[in-house]
Length: 175
Image (spheres, rainbow, N blue to C red):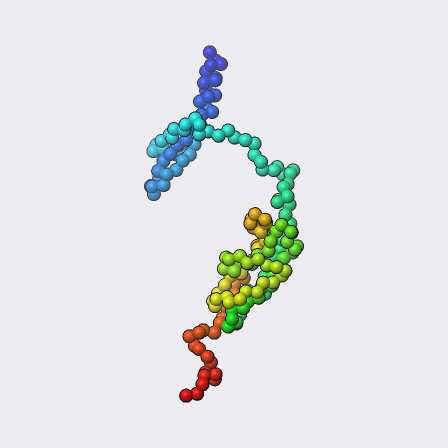
């Protein structure tokens, strides 16, 4: 009789309950513990359960190849923070330093206002960049696109002559 009672108790504890409730903002929440009297149990059909498997996360003694990626130091050498660049054609050359040089399966990119541009070597020249304030940041990504390192952001200001002003006065023909 004790064995039967013990088996019933173990079976009941293995059956996990899920509770649902809606907060004051109308957002539905789910949990294995009811937080208040409004929480109602949610029936779970038997086919919805998935057996747990051992984790594939390596322990401290095992490091995967990705975990052994080099620690990069990145910096934007030029232009410097808060620099004003004057270019009527919107040309901007950015010099980047990466130490160590990125591994073959890692890529160096320059983010210009969040848009990625691949960097070959140690510099990148952008053409026809819009006037205004721009944020630059160097990043190293792996073959999956995961960010491994990033430089501090650098803000620059690009000045271009406005088309509204036309030619300078000394170049305009006389009437």
